[in-house]
Length: 367
Image 1: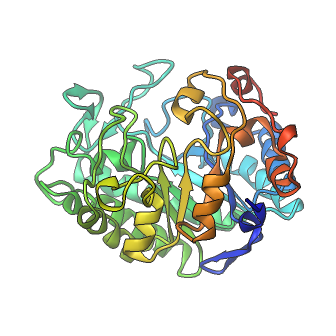
Image 2 (image 1 turned 180 degrees about the horizontal axis):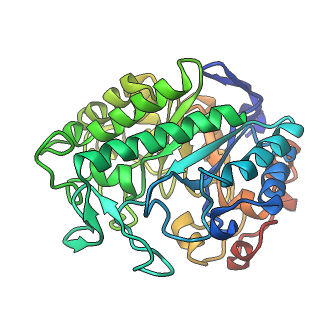
Image 3 (image 1 turned 90 degrees about the vertical axis):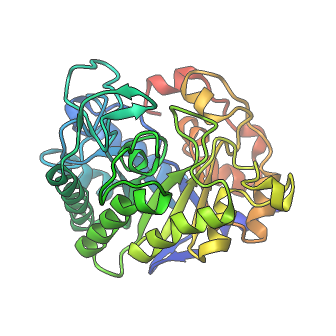
């Protein structure tokens, strides 16, 4: 199929993007003590030069104890903001657009030292019946919301073009969504998904207040959890709408809909094996722009890839067909861009024979 559908312009809440390609946020852990340096700025600069329409950075920790579960994940507060200012300058120097992904891992244990910092979460659980850290008080909840809003305001001040909130994959925001990790019976919990989504809605409102009405705010969401690949928060379109509509109303300009494999239908019992994917259903139900992601351009799926499994370049014809009929609006590419900053230009020029394999060694360096 013609790749030109990937290179149509798109505007997200006033932000003009030259094409439909986003860089997916992929944790790299090359910021010692949370401080992004010149190597991080150069890494993102190369992706801007390579033709990415919107770079979404790796997850960056907001200013809360336990927000990061790796000491080399970049912070988004304090002295780390100077480094992020250099990243913005480098990307803009190539004509690129960039958004930080704001992150809090919640109750997930620290990957290098489980006792390094105290974790916090809705109910002290990071998966069913597995505890870590403390249950958040109402004051903790308010402070966490304020930390996200403060980071979003700093992003705008530094010149970032948009901001994304990490509400997927079993991290803090998702721990509020998930009934197995949110056992609260007051304002921040409840028996239903819309009740448990109040935290995310209030967080979005606070972020929107911090950045104003004309600044793109994206939230990344997933049905699956790293703690349970098969879990689905919303088992039906009605449940999906009940989850997403309040988030759009609270200030989300786009839903970044994470799947392990973008081509898998969200509700095959309704529209068949070639039906709409997660991003497609989210857009259809809410009218809100969506970003699809999940093993784009490579043969293997990304969870296995981040654990070291190698992948070969793969056809994107299925992706192009879905994008051509506007099933979703943007396409987030992860591992293919980790190994090859020029992936967009190669796709545009039809240089598929020049695509780069993904290997475990790619995670060892910033290319």
